[in-house]
Image 1 (cartoon, protein in one colour):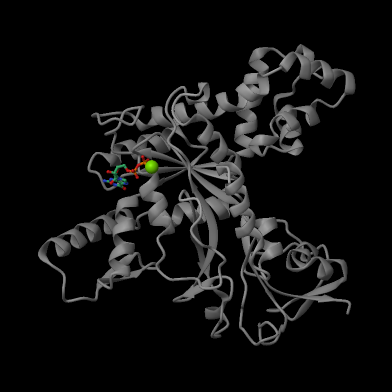
Image 2 (cartoon, rainbow, N blue to C red):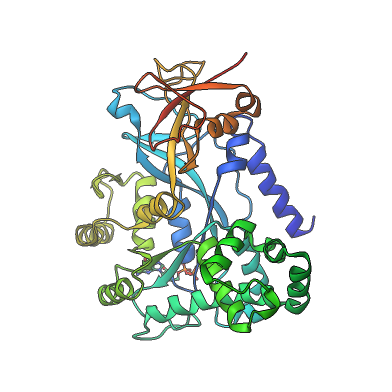
Length: 423
Ligand SMILES: Nc1nc2c(ncn2[C@@H]2O[C@H](COP(=O)(O)OP(=O)(O)O)[C@@H](O)[C@H]2O)c(=O)[nH]1
Ligand SMILES: [Mg+2]
């Protein structure tokens, strides 16, 4: 099978093979892409994010394309507050923290001029298309140059600027191809929004995104009057709208990182900048897996639970503890959580069938957690569970308050909802 078709096939399988999650996954799963130049720690971050501390048995994931993996975002599980013992089916509850699976892609390393086909140009484009949000990974230690080679005192602020520019150029390149023809057609048919969205559909940019970008820039009604500069601005605006980003200032454990992180935060005030140490997170997860430590993800600390550690391992763990004290956490979980909750504006809701026991039909308490866009209504949720339940929706019940809510009720983070539909 040709690689691309195989890839699409596998993704199809992940998304559609599991009966219960079928509808939900196909509609709501947003994919996070890790981007950056070579050697900043993308693969380490990807490994840290996707290293399984626990197996989530019901999740229909088998290793596919090696650069696509499953990670988990975390949120307090309502089981604690309600004093219940939960039996999650599509997620996992560890010490009162719900772990909800999300998809992560380790995007091919991006080098300057990649938009002209240098390096892994096409592979990059392929990955770029899939992602709904990005983690822009930079080396905060300043030890890699723009091409990813070892150096001293490189400014990671430059890396962010270059990455943003490179992404803009990608979009511009596609947008400006055959522009005269597109503009003429757009003017004749009075539907430039649709034409641009079609041209950019490979990048997963919607008509709504295009409309919003054109409005933001107050572009001339007649696209044939747009200048090159307008097209460039349009590309940049579309990137901002359709590809939200968070900055991971990685290698924060390096002694030179502190200064650079400060400057990144000052320079990119509109962005969320999170210091990360992918290497430390990976080390902690592996030590936990090997039974050497218990990793406390609430306190962001760990306890050594094995006697068989050698001197070097003990020293390494003490070094890690110092780091955790200084930075509070490795930042890896925070990147995931903020990407979904803040950048993509998502919330977690818990559909149940028995609003008194908070369970499904089989008695599983708080069985499913759905990650949905803020603004999702009770009826939308019904459709995510099953088309028929959506079609026959009558009302929903807020299980905590034992109160009826209507079809247009906008779900709130942590809501436990029973859908009542006609038989
Ligand atoms: N000190 C430190 N080194 C890291 C960190 N993350 C990655 N590295 C190192 O940086 C190098 C490149 O990492 P890799 O994940 O392959 O980078 P990629 O090319 O962006 O995928 C490797 O030697 C990693 O061990 C980190 O958080 N701290
Ligand atoms: Mg890599």
